[in-house]
Length: 360
Ligand SMILES: *[C@@H]1O[C@H](CO)[C@@H](O)[C@H](O)[C@H]1NC(C)=O
Ligand SMILES: *[C@@H]1O[C@H](CO)[C@@H](O)[C@H](O)[C@H]1NC(C)=O
Ligand SMILES: *[C@@H]1O[C@H](CO)[C@@H](O)[C@H](O)[C@H]1NC(C)=O
Image (cartoon, rainbow, N blue to C red; front, side, top):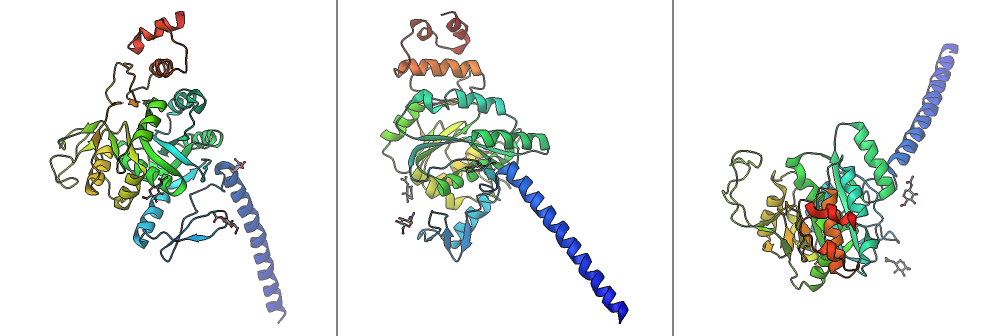
């Protein structure tokens, strides 16, 4: 009898002890997590699948019925969004953005992101009435340092979506898919420009292009037509991966534009587990299946290796050299009347001559 009482008491104290330790560990852990990733924004956890209803956290926390979504599509979108570790983006859900720019950025390319933010990505420079937003989509690497540094950067700049998708050239289509679905579920917009982190965008030209566009189902860029499917080398796809020998038309992935309606139309075809290793061709193939055909469009210069200035640039690639970006930006600003005319600068056609600019 005595023995049993003692035994029960001991069990009670052991439980009490474990409870106290557990509570302590839990609070510590969630505090750490909160500080690191800002849990209020952590995961786009707003998406709850409920009997074919999509719950969106509008201010009143009401259930919104989306008539055009099937349960399966909602589940697929949810699955793609579950790859988001966190996003730190401040979303203005009441405005319609003219343009959302989704930049697929390698996690360690902090310098490129900084250059974009201070140059063509800086809204103050363009001073437009139209709203645009730049979002960097990054992946995962094994190095903890890179992940921590990205979180620090994201906290300050509030323009990063961090994914649990490994940084890998052959998985880039996943960044595009998740980016499109994220934008659809978080923002209202007229168009999305998908780009890489080594491009220059003339925002005035891009915005004018979208405002003038009359095609509902638009897909614009440098069109790749009758592009053979390579069976060896970097861009290789096996017959199992892709049976056809020629790709459907697609826009080169350095920078292309999808209109809002096209985004809504292509998303149901996305399957994050079934992608081609060539991201731009993959997007083109799916678009084509829905009847959206890539359109060759003036202003998309995907092989502008000499960094030539043209006054109709919407996107120029490559522009990984900061001097090239400065040059294109300066000439763009002069041409659209936002900087005073400068015969010296205007006499230059390629950035290589830009050294002359500083002599001024
Ligand atoms: C987390 O995000 C909210 C909303 O944007 C912000 O007010 C808060 O300061 C953030 N906290 C940290 C620790 O960054
Ligand atoms: C939230 O509720 C208020 C008061 O009922 C209403 O005026 C408002 O339109 C609602 N907001 C949304 C986004 O439904
Ligand atoms: C985008 O397209 C969807 C589907 O067609 C439509 O419901 C929505 O209103 C559109 N958004 C804008 C900003 O045009």
